[in-house]
Length: 370
Ligand SMILES: *Cc1c(COP(=O)(O)O)cnc(C)c1O
Image 1 (cartoon, protein in one colour):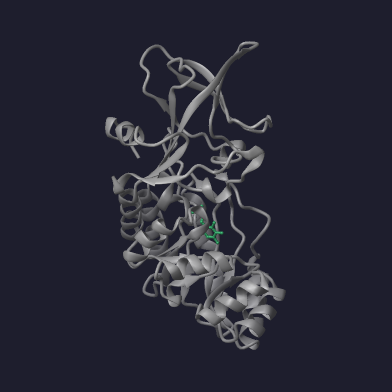
Image 2 (image 1 turned 135 degrees about the vertical axis):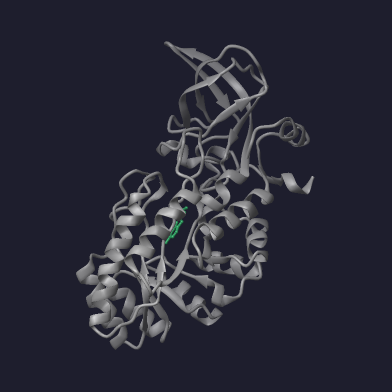
């Protein structure tokens, strides 16, 4: 989303702090991802931003959903997604969720362990199963290494086990790490997929689906590869690796569909000089609004004030020093009462938010509702 006079004007109608969301931006990003690779099917990772109005906007365009919990499944169904358009690529699912997912009609699930296959065979018999491979997360600002994924050997062994258990070995998936700035991660992952694909065929299993995971990045002030560039790299690799037998292709973006669709409007509630640092305290922070800032995601901050800029440390309103948003933010000397706009905060913000210290998650308003 761009900072504009129109944005300031709309924001002026509401009391700080709050999120302002533009569903037009979500729709645009969806169309962009959809067009980035021929034949691509898109499943939105609901955890990035589960607001019902966001899900509804995506469902209306035909977008599918990737869910991990009973609540996310309910939200996807309430958004009018049909169960065949809902998948779960969390490799370790809670049994209660799996039971509800199967009952609701979901049929496609990821796995990366024998225990998960046993669970699937008993609670979601006959399902299509997608093996999660471990791949490089180099160059991702929010790596997801270690917790999930199998090597090629384990994958083949468990795909055969899946078949023996009456499940349908359906495809392969991976996650290159969230906010991934390195196109090669996808290309390298596809090389690995091709090897496993061939070995599976030798064992009599013809796989069908390659799901490309998430990871498409959002703009936070420094250049990131575009969806088009990443799509072209992936499509090039697919053409080279699968000539004449292009797999069914899917992708599960979370961040990229919603990240640029929201601004967090905050107000300066305090200012202090501490040593050589100038601190600005805002009325929303790490715990109730922008958790990822505590782990290195740098949101762009903008004010309406003009003039020479100097570095500030931005902090949230709670008493915990973890509630420090960002250092060395260049701003034109804001005063108490000024508004500070944190840009591109649509992903992994409200879905992470807590009520710590009595500061509730800010409400959400829609720019496109006027
Ligand atoms: C979270 C998640 C995604 C979305 O990741 P982004 O980096 O937000 O695009 C996709 N697939 C799976 C399995 C996930 O857990």
